[in-house]
Length: 420
Image 1 (tube, rainbow, N blue to C red):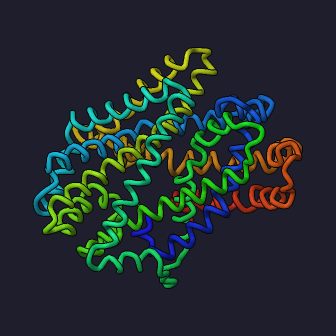
Image 2: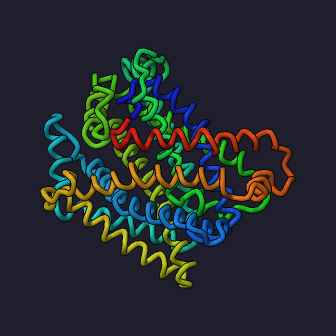
Image 3: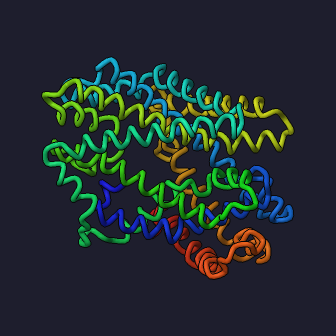
């Protein structure tokens, strides 16, 4: 998104959007989740008094589940590229590397195998619960991921002409600012912070009554941005070093970057090989942690609503994701001619969740919290029953969630549908 929307000017607007939209929306989900002390659907049902507003929670759970299914496909691609990097299959000219991706993504078996594998890995973590599963895995993977990221960033920034990539990220060209860039940054902040997927609300149900919701949301927003910025420092200096166009889009990951690793470290083949393997390990770990969050939404829902064991709930969610993931994967290969509204099944899932469900759930959540939830509940949760002296922050939050966020989300929605 940064490469396609002007670099530094996009980043500046993105920071503004995180503060303007992402953090207030996250606080709203925090309030609902901690007040409800339950899965997303039940939390909405409890705070709404079983009114029609509770449907927002069910829609959030459904959104998270559908994203889990097709996101697992792309996560599986990351595992394939770890394997391909280890076996040095990502060698040769740019055309052969591009053909490798096309051949792999259209294969009827390999992508499904990797999708299945990463979903099983996710299940094995999820079934052990939040503390013994998700928390333990995160404590291992997050520091490792961060260290790997720093190593590759340093290597990328030391390449010849890397300064052009750094300048692209940090020197704004205001002539590139337009409404499309603003709305793209707004939408990216929404997606990056997992708003309206049920993740935030579900995790908030595990918060203690002493957790400072506003402070936590602000910290998450800042860390999310800093890691994204490091990812930019990984990709763009290396891309500019060999003259790769920064607006290559998603193909930067699976087609362009293998060329970057091969050409940028020409003469240091062993080092280029190591960086390539580390990068795709890093990418796979990032994908796995995202899948863990999404999977937990549906697992918590089934565990509580069906009154079943966590293990059984996790199995049911995993089987459902395998079905969705298999269908989405095959729609890029043998079933690629099966189109709905001129979209493959994979693209249809992406469109329905990203451009319809997420904006709708986010918009309705803001309206619900800002205008219909009793002010006392919002105030008590925001101030931890009055123990925090943050009344000023509360007024700012309420203004944003009542007036600013709904309008901005509505603009995103209309823009994505091509109506604006």
